[in-house]
Length: 304
Image (cartoon, rainbow, N blue to C red; front, side, top):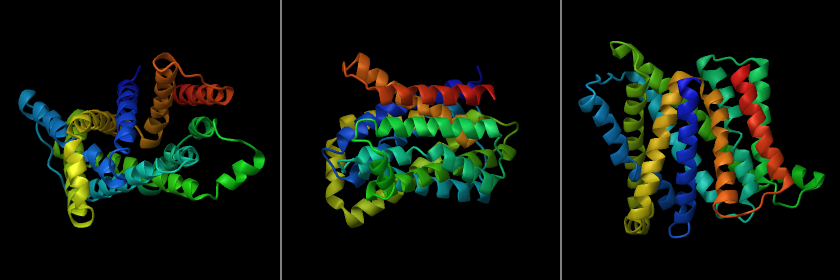
């Protein structure tokens, strides 16, 4: 099995943990605070990973250029917006519909990869992306009243719009991170995807933390106290988030962002495994169908 696949599955598992904790934090703080926790508490872990590689394993640091900074800033700010929109969806009663549209990220990443990087995808890859995206969307709306009319009208709801916009910014950030990481390769004695990913993560998460901290201090200073009070779950979110991001960055340095994000849809399978085996919840036929479509999409992607 290729390295990027193993890394992606591990990152998806960690992201599932982070998302569960982040949703919990939304109950004790606002959208901005719950968004900031992911970045602010992730900084120590991201810098620790970079320090271990640099000092512990004596791997040379890359020298960033203008192209790196451009893509890293675009990716970092896009991820802030995407995360804010996704966390904001937790406030809506029918946020499942919006979340479904946010999962169009792989398809949108493929589009951005074509526009900005000139990356192409085979017909089989596009079909695999479509199948997995539809599978996730089916899961997301599986427990809502379904009819042809409701499915059509749901496209034009506010939550659907927010979810689709979230997916757009997630797709843009994924392609930007791949571009930033690849821009570091020429400054190294030889390409080192682990160091490239770690350096990109360290810079981006610092940028995101400083940007959001300034915003909070100016616009929502009361949120900072809530963030500090919730330091215990915040550290868990930070560890899981930084570790997952490290995995994403490594995988996307090795493979196209859209393809990585399709395999990353296995996160939904981890979510259902937890629901069934830990929380003893039941899943309905549509959710089973959605899971099967995700698996089919991933398998197709890996064999085409």
